Image (cartoon, rainbow, N blue to C red; front, side, top):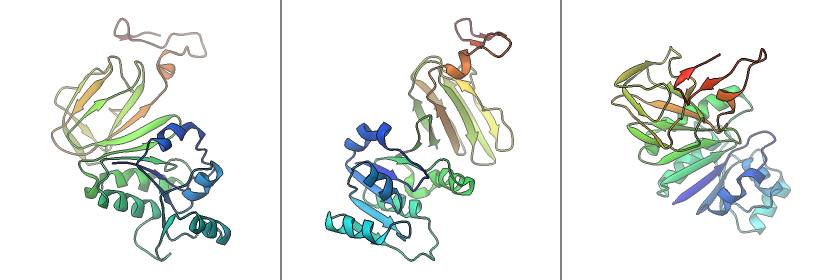
Amino acid sequence: MDVVIVANAPSLRLDPYREMLAGADLIIAADGGANALADAGIRPSLVIGDLDSLSAAQLASLTADGVELRRFPREKDETDLELALLHAAALGATRIDILGALGGRWDHTFANITMLAMPELQGRQVRLIDERQRLFLVRDQATLEGQRGDTLSLLPLTPTVCGVTTRGLFYALEDATLHFERARGVSNILIDPPGFISLREGLLLVVQHDDHGALQFARDNEGGQGLNIERGKVTG
């Protein structure tokens, strides 16, 4: 089951994601995510959370449209997005794409990223997506789809991530150890898609920029060249 969750991000525009939303088996709005869906003329299957970001008129409209509303107390342990993720997992979702979870308040963004490590999500493909990048967690191995030249950063979410091996990336890793407090995994490049990554121990966050090489091939302000992946070396 493919589920799309729409979170309550400020100024979220759903036009770039219409194809994704149309192909979903289920659309879940995490509280105010229902506002972005309403602006786009898209009906969710479910709205979940404390619903404090929705007006009385909006709630009435959703009810009239037959949308299921699951209201929780405002004083609760989980965020609205966490409730949506737990519900999707309980339904047996195999793929969960989350829109509107990046940007806005930094504390919310960071919490949304760390929720990828929820044990309930193990064995499911879960991604945080915006117009420029997508984030997902690797627990054992993953295929790295995308375009040649895309920038990828490999960021540990545990103190160490051991046995990291990559294929198809410019900066190759072979049974490497990455450390939470070090930036070694930042700004790698996909040069032979699809790439591949595996690890032996830990949790690794992949941040993939869908830039088609723009970050790697652009000239700097002094006219120097960017990364030359044809020759497999950095030039400047």
